[in-house]
Length: 58
Ligand SMILES: [Zn+2]
Image (cartoon, rainbow, N blue to C red; front, side):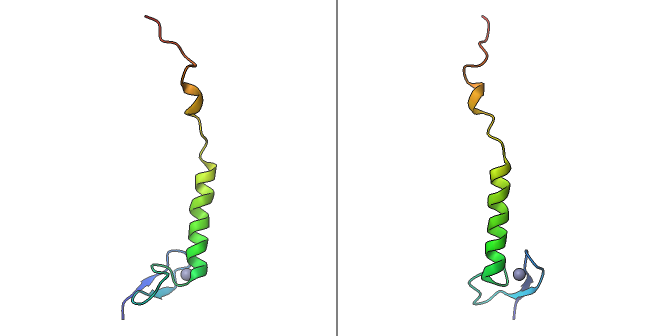
């Protein structure tokens, strides 16, 4: 049987017939998803004010 270490907790997780792969459980899947969402929240949005802020001289 194929097993891969869970990216969240490192427990060898069954690959075949595992709806949460590559995670070992739904909990680890949700934890990893939450981690990604948190990191996205931390990215500052700075590109919005660049438009019209500086006028190039000609
Ligand atoms: Zn896990």
